[in-house]
Length: 223
Image 1 (cartoon, rainbow, N blue to C red):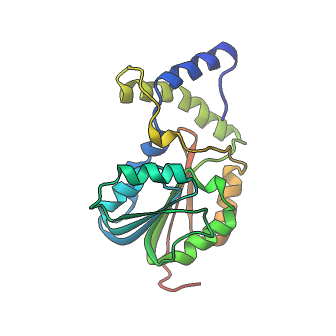
Image 2 (image 1 turned 60 degrees about the vertical axis):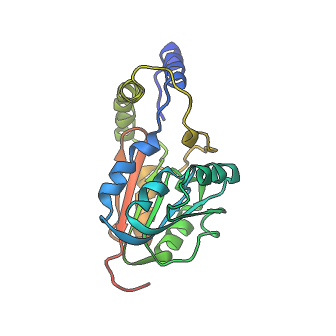
């Protein structure tokens, strides 16, 4: 992430510490628009406190939610109504993935914590024919276009903080308390490696220091 220098960066950090908003949750509506209106089984990898898993449960027959942080998963369970068809599991992907097949697999701000190629291979293996994989991830800035998106994101980030919080100072959302790690792969590296595992995958750089990856298994067969 590229930040303005000196006092401007310090002022922005202070502003956002008092008025935080969840960049990952910002993409949840986009994820739902990308997915079918109804589907059977869904898997949310790196589920955190379960915000997306609960949203998927409004469309799915059942949702498996996986995260490596036990405290975060416990918070998710506490926030989830008993009648919601969401099952939480503590474990690290890709080894701890519950067995598929899944009609939908989502992974938000977690893939850069995992072995990239191995995880995509496992997601593909557990995806049902005709299923959809959606990733919202973080990439390391490397190009002029990357830096331009970051520059544009800075004022928009301030505007979104004011709109979402009504200008008020607010506590940090529970979903933003999970452990974090800086990304190491560039967007070009992500797109190249993903194409090797998921032919026809769509990878796009996005605002607010995120990228999206969408792949649909249209082959109708495994392999």
